[in-house]
Amino acid sequence: MHRLLLLLLAAASLGGCEALRTWTPGFVQPYRPDVQQGNVVTQEMVEQLQQGMTRDQVRFLLGTPLLTSVFHRDRWDYVYYLQRGKGNERQLRRLTVYFENDRLQRVESDPMPPEKLADNLILGRRPKAVPQPPPQEPQPQITIPTTLPTR
Image (tube, rainbow, N blue to C red; front, side, top):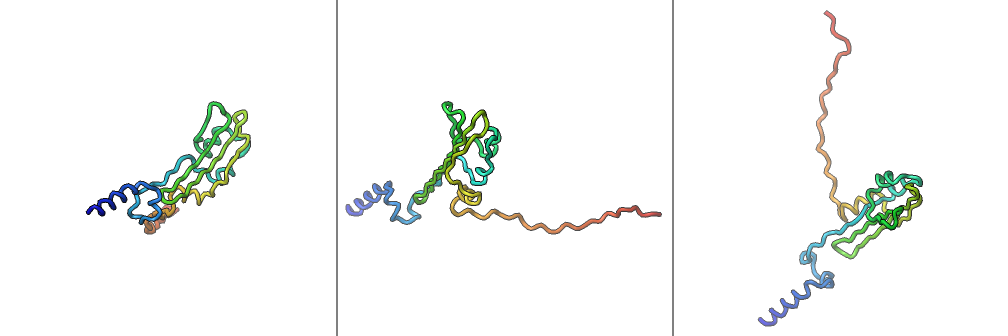
């Protein structure tokens, strides 16, 4: 009885250890959600940026910047961070936009994912198929005579 109690106590105390996750089955592990923070910026969005764009045009294209500073008024930072709940996958991407006289001057960026990959980042590793609308039956064709019948 003491051995069983000691074994249960040891299992309970090891339950909080990260190393325990590597050798325990998945159904025993706690649920850990994916953590996403920041702006999802794709390669196609970066390619649309042009020197001379206004701040409003950049905001329309990329969204509201994650970081703005009163000390660097001519700099906007777009940051995206993803940590998967299962596994050790972490992603960090940065895009910095510099303005001069309220016009886009230059852009510094990490490699950004293409649009298709960005969708999978948002939807998760195994995104479910988008439901298709049910098929519609063809509507009966009604013809309207172009001339009026004569009497």
